[in-house]
Structures are given as structure tokens and as C-alpha cells.
Image (cartoon, rainbow, N blue to C red; front, side):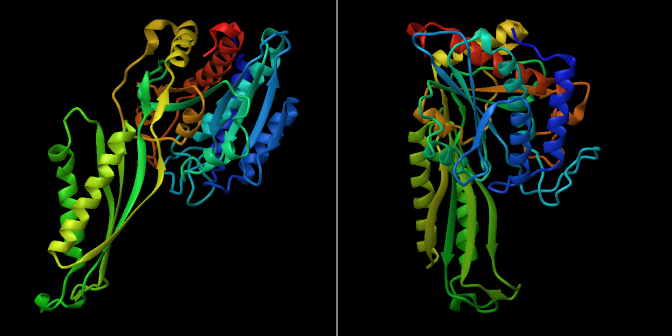
Length: 397
């Protein structure tokens, strides 16, 4: 098994703190990319910028001979979220309006740590490891750019990780089937007739349609779907009006639909559309509905999960490896890689029970990462890659 030395752990930790202190939002990861390139160049690891994006691709080739060399792709997302961090840390965000509250700073540092381990042990494997440092996961679009630029060409297996604050540090979840939900944003604009608030009968208030649609969508999952269908309809934004005594001509409602099966997502889209259109018509309003920024569920390949379980069990003991954990409706555009190639998307526990701050959820302004999870992620990445590359060709995933 490949393990980080204490010196290497300290270096990986300093990388994570640098990225944490210098967060950059989607498609603006300039300093982040420069630092990644600097580190890869320092270790003599071949790398290049991907197209016109801030993405970085690197390649490490094993030195063992093979008649059927394989290639595995390891991916880390590098962007931060457009929000303010509320942690009081020496390495807290120095960029107003940007914060690494989803752990991507740790993903990036962990993949760089894995790169060091793999580069130091080229003589022990054949084939190659492609390291993808992907921009713009949070805004959706980064994975599609990497695929369009050919970064999946010649890849036999794709692997990614995510830190999981609901899971105790030192544990790894290797789930069969859907590891993350498919997600889609929706926007509904309601149009009515404006007027004075004192004579509502002379107007057609679109705020009424937006409000009724919001309430009705909260009951849709229970009333229009089987209790065994896992789905979510969430509304996070309602906007309408300019003053308390004016009936506006337009109101806006925005939210998200999420599910673990593509066919369920399709059904939910139709329910949202039917609900909004019928309520608008009942209130003498019209509406315009759009869906966008959609990503499919992250579907794990069974054989890839089998190998993930074997690797994790050897690394931390099978008692610390879970194949099922409580589901959350979070999504990840890693799903686009999984559509194209067999894939394993694994969750690394990042909660230290002795440090309550590490139990804050993803996207919380107080999200904090347990350092031990960072080291485990780096070691898991490296060992999983080598476990795949050492398998005989006839046992390929």
C-alpha cells in the first residue's frame, strides 16, 4: 500500500490551506491553476492547460511493461463557491465573496498528494494515470469542457472522490448504483395585470400564482409519486413586486428538481410544468417555464465499486468501509464522466467527533475539513489507481 510520509502529509496540508485561503469561483480559478501547475512542474509531472479553460490535465506513466496497458482518470474539482466564509481560521478565505465550503480545496490537494505517491512509484505499475483538475463544478460546465477537449480519450475507468461531513473520518463509502442525484434548475415567470392594491379585481396578481405554485409543489412528491420514488422539488427564490401597494405585472419563482433515476427527473419536470400552468390559468395569469443546468445522476459501475471496496478495505480495514449511507440529494457533474466511462465516485468521511466544527454540512459558511480525511483521500486515490492498473487485461472493468 502506498502511504504518505509525515513530511508529505505536511506538504499536502499546506497545499490545502493555500487553496482554502485563495478560493476562486467557477471559470476564474486562475491562481489555483497556476499553483497546481507549479506543484506538478516541481515534481517533474507532465501537464498541460486544457483548452482555453482553467483546467489542468497531467499524465503519469508506469514503467512496468504490459501487453495491454490501461489508463485510469482521477478527477478533482478546483472551484470555490460564491459566498462568505464564517470560520475563524488562520487560513480562512482572503477573497471576499468566495469560499471553499464544499471541500474542493481538499480534493485538489489530495489529488496532488496522490500524484506525488504515483510519481514516486512508477516502477510498480504499468499503464498510465491521467490527473484531471477540473474547473467549474459548482456552476456546471467544467466536466463537459474536459470531455469536449478529449480528456476522456483512451481512458478505461474514471474515479472521483468527495469529502462527506456526515461520515466519520477514517471511513469510506463505496456505494453501488446512484452515488449522487441528478439535478436540474427551473425558473418560472408568471405574468399578470398590474394595478393598485386597493382594487385587486381590476388586476391579475402574478404573486398569487407564484405563491400557490410554491405551496402546491411542496405536496407534489407525496401526492403524485410513489413513496418509493426518491425525489425532491425545492424552491429557493420567489421575487415579485416593487412596493407594498402596487400589484406587479410579473413574479418569479426558482428552484431545483432532484432524483436518483433519469426517468423520475423526467416525470418531475412534467409535474412542475403542469402545476405552474394550471395555477396560472386559474388566476388569469400566464407563465413561462424553463429548465437548465441539468446533470444526470452519478451512477457507479458495479465492478468499479467492487475494486473500490477491495482497495479501501486494504487501506483502512473492511469494518470501516460502507456500501450504503443515508442519501442526500446533492449532485456533481462528475456524472458526465460516468455517462461516458465506467466510473467510481467514492465518499471520504471528514467528520472528527472530537471536533464538532467538522460536522458542518457542505455549502455551510462554517464547513471545515478534518486533516486526516485529506491524507486518506490522497492515499486512496493512489492505491485505487494502482489496483486498477495492476489487474490483468482480461479482468478489466
